[in-house]
Every structure is written in structure tokens, then in C-alpha cells.
Image 1 (cartoon, helix red, strand yellow):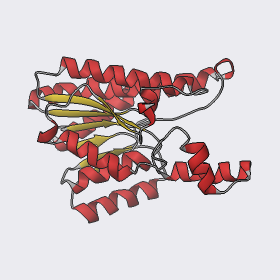
Image 2: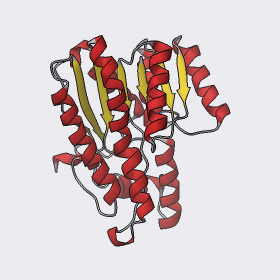
Image 3: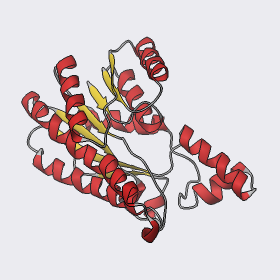
Length: 255
């Protein structure tokens, strides 16, 4: 069974679908309209024939996160794979960065992964198996201006990944961070349209010269690529890969 946070859309949903396609039951988590979430669940069940549950847990708070993990264990008896994907973003200069945005980004992008890992590890140790996959970012390895909270949180996720890997190294549990560059999602599509209108330039130029300025291959990663990598890390073939931060960034961090 795979529990994927922030999985009602975008990268998280792509990863959840990849695990469902591999035959795993999944627990979805995230915000959205109840009817949309129910439809997402139904589609996964009909396409892949696996059990799907949903938790509305607020990833900024420890208690609902603990309840989500408990629900997953009560329902399925075990958590084989934990994918920490939930995240938010805010862009502003340091001296103008709203304190409440800093607190929210650190809570959702970093602390939530601590809370889920802390809650899931006892069961993984008992079952002598676990795969923890933290979705970090190229910004977990390098920085960009105006993203103080996001960069700090993603660097923190890489550090948490290494500590988790060391503490579980002899328990048949692995922990790795995936560090994507720009990934094509509905959120990014909205950014393309917004930038094209505000700058008065074609969308192709927005993609190449604005969004993918730091990404040498000049193409977006796909949620399917991240899903396939996640499934590989959770497989027997990934048993010796732990404590790593794997860039999926088109060469961004090779600079």
C-alpha cells in the first residue's frame, strides 16, 4: 500500500496512479472539491482495479497527519510506501516575505514529512519493509532568489532524507529524495498563460526563456516520469539506493 500526500492533482496524483498501475492500493490526500476527489478515486479504481482511500488531513498540522497514518494502517494493515509530496509556494524578497507564508511553507513542505515518517516508521520496522520517497526539488540542491522558505524547506527535506536513511539502513527501509526541476502540471500551465499575458510574449518563449531558463534540456519533466522513478525506488531493484537526492531536472543542477 502506498500513501501519497498532496495527491489529488499534479505530481502527487501522477505518482499515486503509477503505484496503482503497479498493483498497489493507494491512500490519496489533498485539497479539492469532494466531487472531484470522488471522481479521481473512481477513475483509479476502474483503471487499475485497486483499493483507493482518501484522507483530507491538513498537512500543516501534526494531529491530522497522525490520524491519516492511523487510518491507513487500520484500513490496510501496513504502509509499504510513503511518498511525501505535499507542498506550497510563495515568492517574495526576504525582507518582504510574509511571516505567515514562511511558517506555512515550512509546516507543509518540511514538517509534514517529519510527522508522516515518524508515524509510519514503527509499522515499517515491524513489517521489515518500507520505502520512503520525499519529493524535494532542484531547489533542494541549489537556490533561486525570492524563494527563501521554499528553498530552505526543500534543503531541509534532503537533510531529513539522509537522516532517515541512516537510521533505517539495517531495517530493509530506504529513504530517498526526488529533486524535480519544472514538471508539467495544471499549475504550470496556468503560470505559462499568466506570464504570456503579463509579458506580451508567445507561450513558447515563456516556456523556453522564463520557466525553463535554468533547465538545459528545455523540456518539462512529466508526472509519469516521476511516477516511474518512484515505483522503481520502491521495487526490489531499488533496495540499495538510500539517502540519495536524485535530480530529475534536465541538467539544471549540473551547472
